[in-house]
Length: 385
Image (cartoon, rainbow, N blue to C red; front, side, top):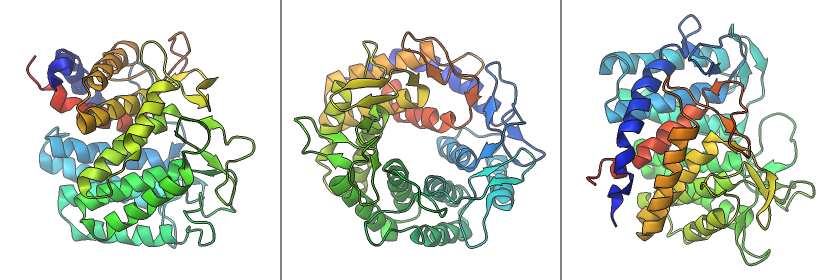
């Protein structure tokens, strides 16, 4: 397979990253609070007054960990590691909950605004702790990840399987998305902390994906459901609402699962083919939300979705050797670079159907999607044309 098809885009990717990383870990860091801001303006100014979601802090730590792995340090390697530890200490003070886990939202001054401990957020803190262990080598971070899993176990639904959305009174509909990120977290922990016990935990979530999330019986095209009743039946109101981005994201995750020694994951091409058939426009960009059968629900296009599209194409190309998937990856990456990203290192977070920027600012949470996607593209970007 000729991976050099993406190589001409390498200078643009490198130029963006050379602007983005110093910006988001400079202006994007509130030194006084020791944590990251929720968003920047399009011209790169810090929006410090916005409330700060727990997941943003964990995702930025993830990016810092991956940047360390790639040798893209904020300052020296030691300064980079010290920054990660300093932020984690601040985040634990502001978001850490008695009894384990992390609250979901604090104010700009560090006060708790929403004390719920949300499964989605805990998954990203597992990943942050795994990266902290990788960067520092300190056993305490591996132990903290295991302690956090202990809290996650308190959210388990022993009757129906899977986990509750949070420690707050159960809200419906149930969702696959937090379980997907918990699966992602278990895979990263298996890679960075050791396969035992993390791969077995990933196996359990993969089984839930097979038996609850993936619908292979309704019509000719298998698809990933998002919303469910308490006993994992399709939610009456939203059970037909589908997310093309999650189809691509699961494609990438199943590729990682196979590599780490999980099951053969034969669902990978099924999800990929559905994602390509439903929910993309003629530029190869995916819509935010569809209905079963490929009918439009929300024809807007978030940047994070396109990052998952890119990762899905690359994962499928790696799995199958399909040159068309690599050409699709080139097309999507080109459109991300030309339609979403700015020279300042910020981005338009959402486009309208006709590709106008309709976002108010550049949210910090998107950097995780973007940086991971670009990292996945690096081998092909480095190939000689």
